Amino acid sequence: MTTTSSSSKAPSAVKETVISKPGISKEVIDEMSKEINNMLSYAVYNGININTDINSLIQDSNVDDLINVHNLLCKNIAPATPKSIEFSKKLHEKSKSRFVLGSLPLVRNLIILAVLFLVIFIITGLSPNVNNDSLDKGIMHNNGMKLLLNIGYLSAIAGLGVTFYLLKSVSNSLKKGTLLPEESIEYMAQVILGIIAGLLLSEILSVYITDPNSINLFNKSVLALIGGFSSDAIFSMLQGVIDRIKSIFIPANS
Image (cartoon, helix red, strand yellow):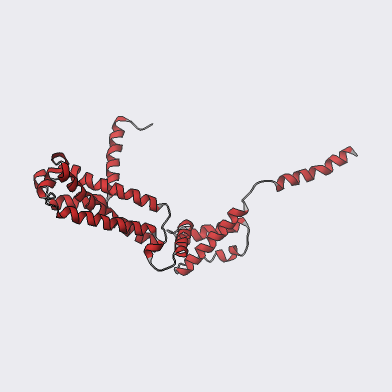
């Protein structure tokens, strides 16, 4: 009797263990279904060809089919992602008007910065302290208000360059549906990097890439603009130089 009782309890114990085994939560499955619907809506709205293999998979609700549908749709809508589509959808839902600056704080902030840099550029450019001679002297031979105005002039040009680049980049991201919420922080940091790159190129590197006696207002202005517009390239160049120097003193692990 004792043996029979113990054997009858064993299957129930095994069954309880199987049921309590953790798996994919319902929240994850619901989120996956929501992303699938968003991607389908995005593809239909933008006229993107949808892989017809999802027709047979989408009828079922099992996890394997949902994952396969999700993977197929991610390939169809690339370079857009479920995250970027969800972010764009929220922006459109929050916007109560068609005024783009109200629904896109990132674009609004960049335009405000561009106008600010333009105002600084005009004000400093009108000053008699900003001229060919003062720019030729650079930061090493200027002082006081003259130095501040010259640095402000070059910084404003670099700022215009980087905001011009970022506004174009945001416009492309909106068209492709690849705009992400993290980019608002990244772009603000890139504005600072652009100003620094513009000053480096116009005030420091210009001495080594041009004849100091031939530096004038146009040359330094162009260098500041290029530095701001191509801050990523300037950073990559400097990083490449540092990596080469490190490779001399720190050999690669064999």
